[in-house]
Image (cartoon, rainbow, N blue to C red; front, side):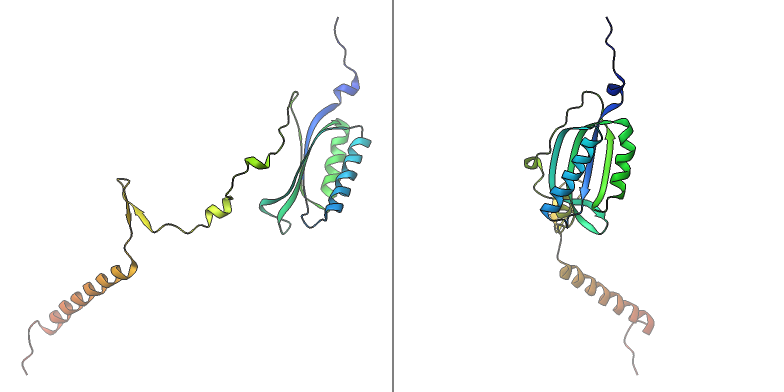
Length: 178
């Protein structure tokens, strides 16, 4: 016996929807916006399998003059005919900074975001630390760099000696007897 699939099963797929909302929204506005979105998904015949609210997070780069965004991820079973309408709905939403809809493979298991696994130091903090005052030789040993003042003093002494030699050459080297 072979198992037959109905046309409804063929047209439904598992999708992941990621949204980054405007960080200036109040909590009540965010809840209402997400509730309206979920209602639209369910009216279309979709079924939400997973919800993962990340909250307000720093963006990797600025979007619409914002440095932060409110992240929300859904995994949902949606009819294929609704995907085009969903993308258009997300595109015209003024409170979204960015959105992404992708089709997931069969058997996909979603792993929820875990805040405890986040690194303690952000990438920006690392990039803007002051460099250490050391120089590295090719042998791999570390040697401290001499202060600028000491280097400048040697350079000034060398310049004085060079100037005296040049002056002697110009004048004719030796004492002038007048």
